[in-house]
Image 1 (cartoon, rainbow over the protein chains, first blue to last red):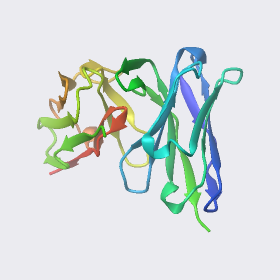
Image 2: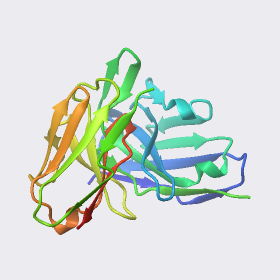
Image 3: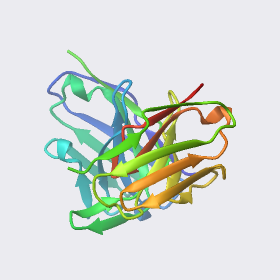
Image 4: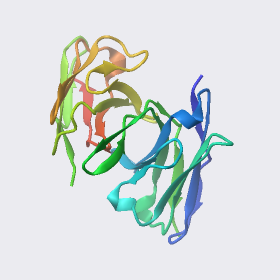
Length: 127
Length: 102
């Protein structure tokens, strides 16, 4: 069955970077994109960005544009999300999700829904 | 800036009642809106995509409607397992509506 399995929890100091992995199985990786979403403790969902299946299209939320990089590795069917210059506000549960398709409008490409989700990776930023 | 708003913040209902949740977009998203359910300690689960299509395995009591800027998620008769938080998404997410037991 379709599965997205994320890497383990991380504890980082302020100013550091974190890289979260999302290993997929059970489907053709190259035919789907991946979005990343985070959820701070007790808060709602915050969309961070999306990368298309062959990484020729990507869209990052404006808030993260300067310090996030999303990539995919088709050889291992794994997606990665790196977030730099961490602060305590980045303490959250980070999710990856499979994205079946994408759309286009005047603001460019953007992803569709997330139909299968990873289990989440806790990132704690603390000195 | 594109924003999704949801109402109400909290919906207190009894099992068997009908739940109607609203989501409004600050600009048209055509039919490109999804709804998710999230329970404590779990990842969100896709319920509805393209505004009206039920995801695989989602019971028929869940239905979506709307297009453009105004959307609705309806749960026709609440089951005990439906008490959760519901989010709409079109790229960004709405803030969520909590459906709790009255």
